Image 1 (cartoon, rainbow, N blue to C red):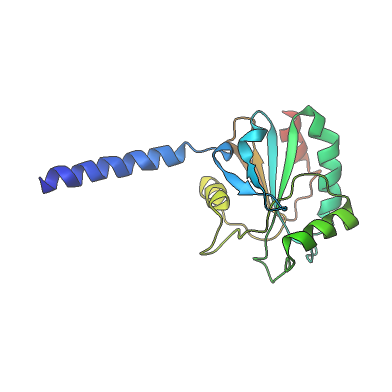
Image 2: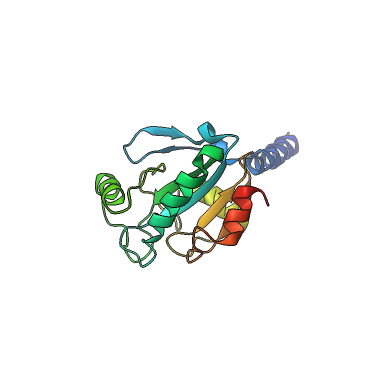
Length: 176
């Protein structure tokens, strides 16, 4: 009986691993910067650029080009989702309200911003655990970008210093 129970346990463990591998972006629900539930499946059929952000970083001016990119391609089925994170040298110390105000006042951000999360470490958010696990990379700094295809699978990622208008990102958005 112990052998059968153990064998069944192994089979169930293997199946749960296979099911976890089949996850897509659309299997996650997060909180937006206002504290409301935000189901990522609402973006099914769109290309999604997921970016961890920070307000007090040398790369913070990327908000300007991210917003420009969002406005330019949003009508053609593209969305950017920002995830503030304070994982790198305390460069996102503010509350969600302070972050939202900063983004609006300084960069006119209209793309969806989520509640502050952790993108690495023991308290990594499940979404970022999935993103980093699927790409076999760690988030290296603020403004790392993950490119998600219309079916919710990961197309690739770009380093934090890669600018939003980099040819790899534009080619992916335009389907080239």
